[in-house]
Amino acid sequence: MIAYQKVSGSFDLTGKNAIVVGGAGGIGEATAEMYARKGANVAIVDMKDTCGEIAARLAAQFGVKAIGVRCDVTSQESVDGMLAAVVEAFGGVDILAAMPGFVDLYRATETEISCIEKHININAIGVFRVCKAVANQMIVQGRGGKIVCVTSQADFIAINKHVAYTMSKAALVGMIKVCALEWAEYGINVNGVAPTVVNTYMGEKAWQGKVKTDMIEKIPAHRFAETDEIAAAVLFLSCPESNMITGEDLVVDGGFTIY
Image (cartoon, rainbow, N blue to C red):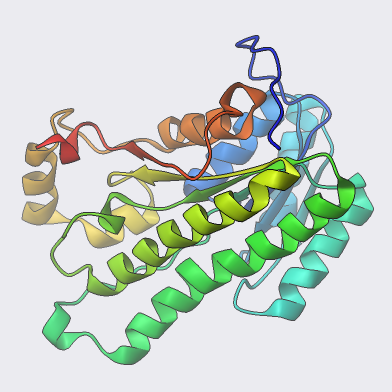
């Protein structure tokens, strides 16, 4: 079961060990910094070569343990090696923030099957590969844990040229619900955070020029999200304060989907 813990409102993660997949930039880096600020040891996991550099900065700034590990979520061997490195460094895992991402935009009639397969391999299967490995580690540890995946508003609404991305993110939401159901008996919460467009490299790639201004006009907040705003939602779902929430996809979209 997912145990009750008196809610303090402190969102304290002191002594917790967190993995942030996609932690070398964007929402992932903002999340890793927020975890470290709240006292968690953090593993920066990414394909980028800057993982170690970011980990060193967080360790120096917040006085926590931090390591950088390169990992390809499409490779089981790579994921297994990453998890082994984290367990060796920290002694266990309490939190997983899984947010590897890929986007390439075409109209549905022009989308190659290989493009759809790449989206699903990274955004859905790759995320599940990491979640499964970490969940099994949490089950062995016997103290529960938190798993948070970054999804998208595109997982439940139609957005032009997003067919491959939407397919992958919708699959991810289905995965979150089933895993939340199956892993609750082990004290593991599994949730998603669904952002609107975020001011990141991927956001800039997908939304430029008139398409960008038109999209902003449709968002009641009249702007795109910043990375720390999404990280704050991930933090909430990673803390004891959210123990009664599991299997959800928390929408952080400035009101875009309210009408």
